Image 1 (cartoon, rainbow, N blue to C red):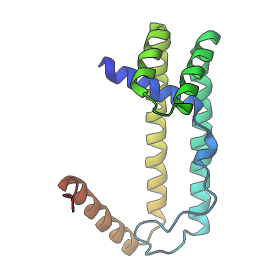
Image 2 (image 1 turned 90 degrees about the horizontal axis):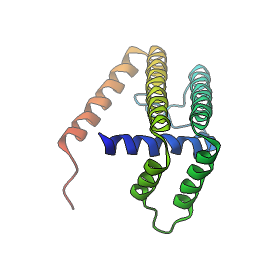
Image 3 (image 1 turned 90 degrees about the vertical axis):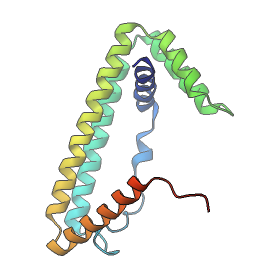
Image 4 (image 1 turned 120 degrees about the vertical axis):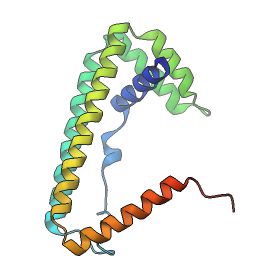
Length: 165
């Protein structure tokens, strides 16, 4: 439980310092599963842009909430820990987690965990809504092909990693 909480704190704070630009795409993605390489329609692209904008807004709101949960001195210290991870030749996330665990107050730790859990829940719900909206634009044949591919992927995940070859 404590390791999970430490990991959650590190990952949550990483959200604060992850550039939103990394989420941006310069070219449209390949066609969705089941569309056999066809490009998304204008309506699908508009929906993807809307979901992307909503995710960016949620990330910005989470970042602001995470920063507000820390004292100014702790914000600076957290920035230093992540800065060191960014420039380290051999980054040690476990040591960073221990450093953050020792640094943050119990109230700050709980706030970070609570905010991160809310972010995960919100983004998951957003993605489920986006998927349902996307699937509603597919023909019955496209939905069937998509379901078939997902079943194949699920089978590959269940069979485990491939043996070394």
